[in-house]
Image (cartoon, rainbow, N blue to C red; front, side, top):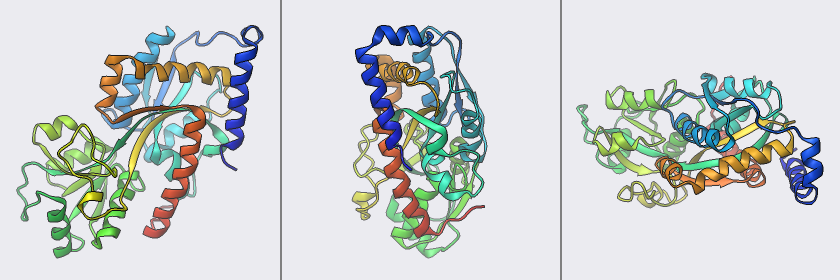
Length: 329
């Protein structure tokens, strides 16, 4: 089963809203009438958290109710997803999550407390962003690493000794680097951390040699991290001088992460519509859009478009998992 049924229901709801606004107003209680909780499965300072807080501030002003960000970390975002899946389907508990939790975890873990298709309704994909391959800007360890070619050469000369950090076992950061390992024909050691900030700190301290994950533009621009490449097929506008992995000799390499909003599956379509419109309006607010653009491309896909992307990427990352033979529990 895919999100096709969900998309049909959402489309029907839009029609109902268009032809019978008076009847809908009589049958649907006003929303929201109390604070909304954005549940984030990753640490404060992570890309998912930063985007959640930017959007929360905007949505709170738009809807006239506080939007509180609640970081419920652990298990690569699965604790937060399970919390939201079990919550009341009333629009007051919203999962702000990422591609790993939604499209990857269910294919890696045997024990997952939620079923994406059964338990969630998509609201909006908000921001899509490439990963950035970074190393320490002040490298003291042996072996100069100024380019992706340097890193690959170092790994080839020292199999299993060059390491990379990620935000957790099975996270998209993990899969992205394993994809690079496979395409380059090298083996770099995976070191999982609790979140992206911790992995980036480890690179700066040279506990690991590299990270391929969400960019920290301040750290890159200050020189504390050196950007070698971006994971998307094209260069990123925020780092125009940094080449893509694809243009550096790996033309089939193209991975982008995203942050999105979902609610429990039985949430009324009218409530989903209110949430989506409030989130979508962030793209039209110059100050909010500027903040979000620092994190990646502002997309604001509607529920139907977001559902299609979930379906497509579930298949794509499933293939990477099988080819890389990544197994967890």
